[in-house]
Image (cartoon, rainbow, N blue to C red; front, side, top):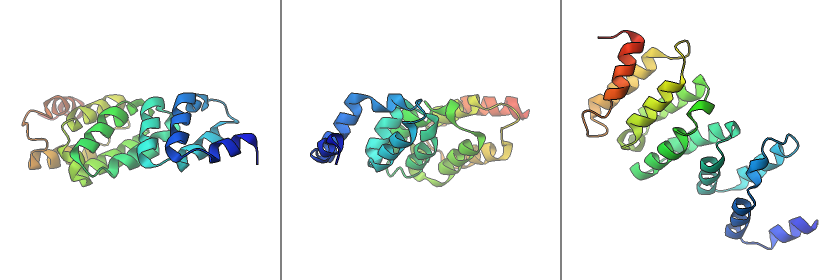
Length: 172
């Protein structure tokens, strides 16, 4: 057993996470030899800790986990925090397929639908796409579902996104 392993094994899970945060070890993700080790450490963290790391570092390697956490939101406040703090902030890191997964999450997760930040999160995601990667029907389906159910309750919540969709898709 190495000294480092012995040291880490003597720490509680909370102390280990505090050490990980304070050491800023995920700042070394751009070092090829360390990336697989750091991803292994990341996978051993609980979901709340993973969300904290993703929020701080926003590495593209965390994109799928960010979407997974968003899809699992079990409260409006959780969906809002994950959407605003992680999904919107990582928008440029998502592929068009990953944005499809996010749209599916919005369609399926009631708490994401009701979260007050969802309109701005969707507008931010839309802004990152180029016209060749936009899946028109998926966007229209999401907006139709949200508008039909009045999520969030403000009838003007999606006005910015609707203007963008109408302009992009030439809809009156």
